[in-house]
Image (cartoon, rainbow, N blue to C red):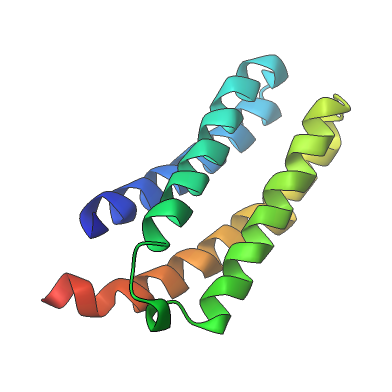
Length: 116
């Protein structure tokens, strides 16, 4: 499970970067299904983490995940409003940086499981 979570988190970042790139190239509508897949991937990771022992996930890790969820919500709302500029701005200045911070905390959290 840990290996799959780590692979999925990396794929998530690649997907976010791809969505950002596609939007900058004017391919707004094509990015909607991909973004939906990214939201699902993040939810899958969170469900997998819920199976870890209670004390494994720190308050800091939970806060980072909340930040990513909030960013995903902002992007989803911007997509619903068909606001290409806002989608791009939230991705570039908020969601991608927050996702990277969450990734670092996730790596730190799962490190003991990787080494064993």
